[in-house]
Image 1: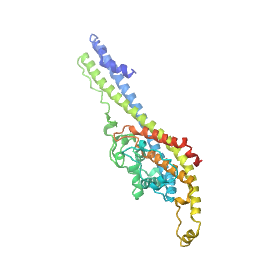
Image 2 (image 1 turned 45 degrees about the vertical axis):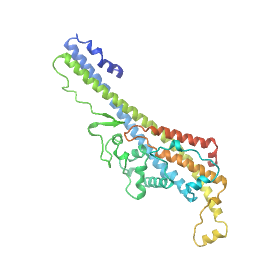
Image 3 (image 1 turned 30 degrees about the vertical axis):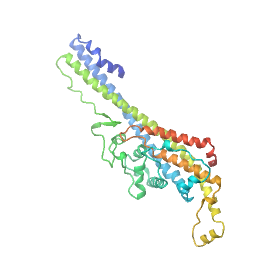
Image 4 (image 1 turned 180 degrees about the vertical axis):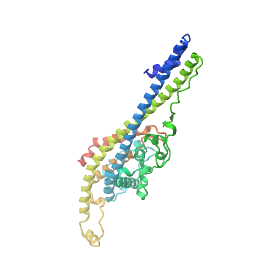
Length: 369
């Protein structure tokens, strides 16, 4: 098979023009040669794209699972513990030493860091998904959660509605439907006639070849072969662009999965420490006559900042900062609405991990080991 550059150049240059003195038989053979080379190049490009499509969709689904497991597992655990300390965001920002770090450069203006209440909703929804099992989800749901942060798909679960539906860009994006191999059940959209869409590039099926060339003069047949082959090569090059974009999406997903798994492991340790802090603070809060009176009437004593040491306040504050960074990683879009890799995805992950690195560099996380 001829390389693409050579083929494209050969089709559109004097290679054809220089053959004007060839006899009819040679012209017909050359026309058939370029026709077959174009078909082979197109089919090879299409085969590579299909392989990459399957790999990318599988990785998107794995990222979707990782996000649901993180939200419904350790993030929910953290939020449940944090709530028991009865801090609001302002109170938390006022306690402990000044360990605040600027999070503005990892916040996508179209996807701001959610409030604590919204984070709770997402965690509850993810927990419900985990309880029902991934097998209960409609086709494309996990890929949609991966591609578009999961906010729309997860938001319905905590209201008691059926899980497995997508909303917003995830439900209407034709690329996401194509990646999954068919139509999204809820959107009713798909790729008709074998058309593939990614980032605004539209690829149509290869036209039938039979009868496309004239049977008259060999020179005309060769010219028709040239024009047809040029069109096929252009379609193959567009397919190669799609394959490249799919490969980039897969790599971004892989990086996100690795980061999420690392943070889930870290939050297991964080949550264990916070549980011990709460148990100690609760025991301290139940000391004294007033606490005994409240307990006598069946009223639970609440932990207050006064029940916490300065070191424990700092630990809670660091954990909250980490949770905000982790939340942004869990909700960041991987694809834009046109189906291309989201330009912010790599930036947000890199900035988020840099922020976590700042915490480690200042030895703040040593308190969780």
